[in-house]
Length: 178
Image (tube, rainbow, N blue to C red; front, side):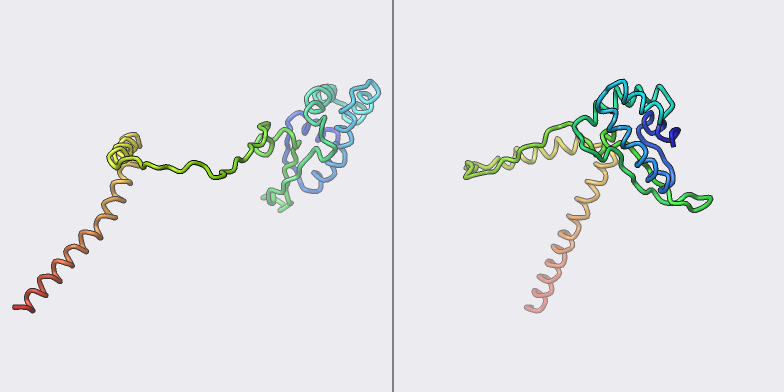
């Protein structure tokens, strides 16, 4: 357990079986709680459990700093499927505050509400809008431009068939009138 806990502290996440991950969570979370108060006694207690001075120093220096405001739940277990050889269920155990995907240091954006905001009285002229769309088409890569032109040709194709059908109907009506 001490080696896995040292690896977890040094690498911030490790892959192991679900049973070992649950046991590691029970082993390492009290150590992280002790690391929040940096005293000689707590360092010695943690060192007696880990037996790795590099892991202890990183735990007290980096990890304790990040989890100082957290009350508990310092680790997260994510089940990732089963191992190929023996079909053992595998899990990823990681320190919660060191995952960049879930943790964001940005403050939450305040949502503003529109309360009777000013309405637009004038609309942009059509020529300016068409010029803006032409600029966008020029900036797109070649593949996207080809897809865009193909899509516009397909969209315009039914219009052309509709007009030819209309012409056929007009000509058939003229023939009936004669």
